[in-house]
Image (cartoon, rainbow, N blue to C red; front, side, top):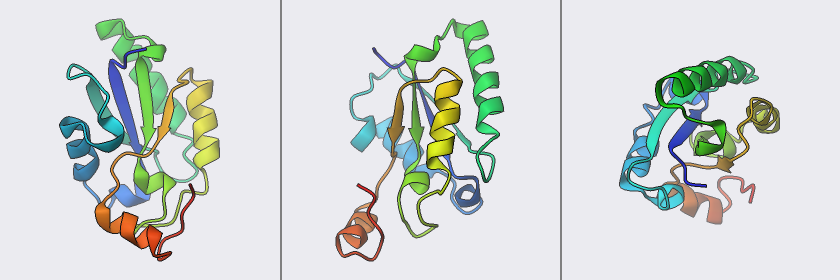
Length: 137
């Protein structure tokens, strides 16, 4: 399966203080977890909508209807990335306690390809190695 679209879901609380630039930049530069996507893969990002992440259902539903209507995009052509701010301990917050629930919503809406992570800074990696941040690997 070649991804035609990547969705990055960012923590709503983190988004209040983070523009998402690092994740977007990593996607466009095809760094890290984005390195194997073709150049013509498109990208969109939005937040979980806030704890507990339940609004993901409505956002994905709206995305799938619009994307299919405009481009015939099928759900199996989409990869959903849970941003690193959601799945790791970092300087914003610890790992989202609702990650498993959010993943279940994503799957229920028909998106099977879920990737944990987006952009990981070198500094955060060093802090995880030094046990300053928790590691969930």
